[in-house]
Length: 61
Image (cartoon, rainbow, N blue to C red; front, top):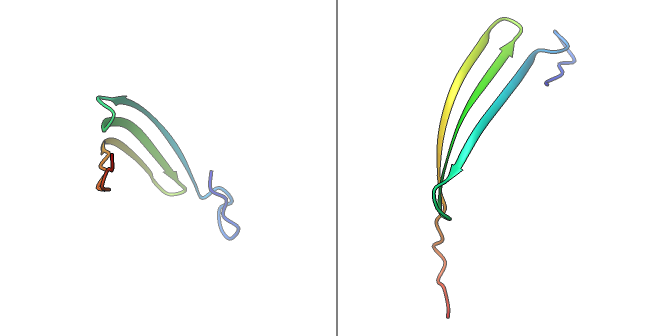
């Protein structure tokens, strides 16, 4: 919830929900839905994200 102190008190609201799955320790994916509700318009967005963990540090031992 966003509060605006100048015009509309509640200028925009957001709703987001997502599900994720870990394929391995270093690879995961997430799919979700975002609804942006502004005073003048509404936007619906489906999102797909892929996360890859990388470790570029030298490992000793």
